[in-house]
Length: 278
Image 1 (cartoon, rainbow, N blue to C red):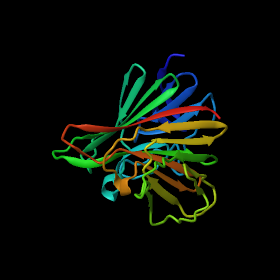
Image 2 (image 1 turned 45 degrees about the vertical axis):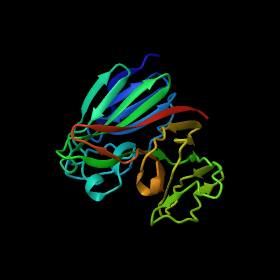
Image 3 (image 1 turned 90 degrees about the vertical axis):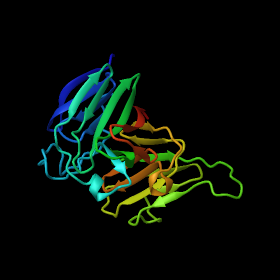
């Protein structure tokens, strides 16, 4: 089936855009964010997690809110760069098998954030784009955060090249992370994380994953995300992949290296997402 792009509603939100090839379907909001709100395959469950407190609600423009789904942020994480309202109407442009949803310029950062979706041959290409609209150069990393629904297991492959007497792997922990957390299992060649509905503290780790891949199996289906690794200096002790898990959801997060972006320039993070039967 040819890729179709249509206006739609989602979970009570209006002004959304659906891109579908008859099997894979994604819905993105243009009323705020932008946020990717839904990712389904063959009529199955939504693999993305939406926050119950804000699901379907229209949040006042001056109020910060988490919505869930997939969002485009910048790193390193900072209160003055990430935690401010983004509830304004977005611009929508379509081009063949692609749709791009772009927020207004942010007064707090002087940047514009956008998400471009392209659906071809069952693969959803998701580009997180940040444009510098300020008068000065800015340094940041593009940070794509995908919140996935609880019930599955996330697996991240990790390379282990023979480096002789020198270290070949590094892991970053956050202050609230316990190294004995039962949700995470380390092996020689991958890391797996299984989120839970239990009311226990959150956990986050990061690592250099040059394979640039993760897989999440849930609802009898498999979500595979690939974001090509790029040499460079990354935030958080060199992490191009990070994972956060809280109650009822898990986040798969990819990042670009930190880049110096001039006025009028933009930088993007590309992720290739496929969903199939497990």
